[in-house]
Image 1 (cartoon, helix red, strand yellow):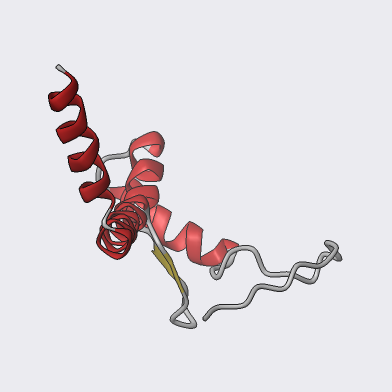
Image 2 (spheres, helix red, strand yellow; image 1 turned 30 degrees about the horizontal axis):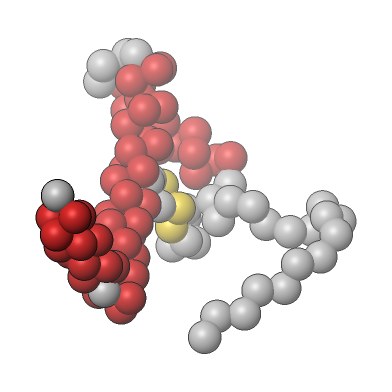
Length: 95
């Protein structure tokens, strides 16, 4: 079980696992080919970043994939589909 500890912000916390230089390096790679800053930023946001130290910041695609997996896990764990089946069956009986 994961545990989280919350504390007051003191500016020592690391928000992103990559630094500014890592972002600029990867951004410049994407800027060289299409030359479109907006497109390059969208690409980085979609696929994520990897820092020089090997740390990884997930992109939107990975986050969505993780959310889908968690949703499926929750539905399977609590069998929420069976609740909807029961409600559907009861409504059909009423009608």
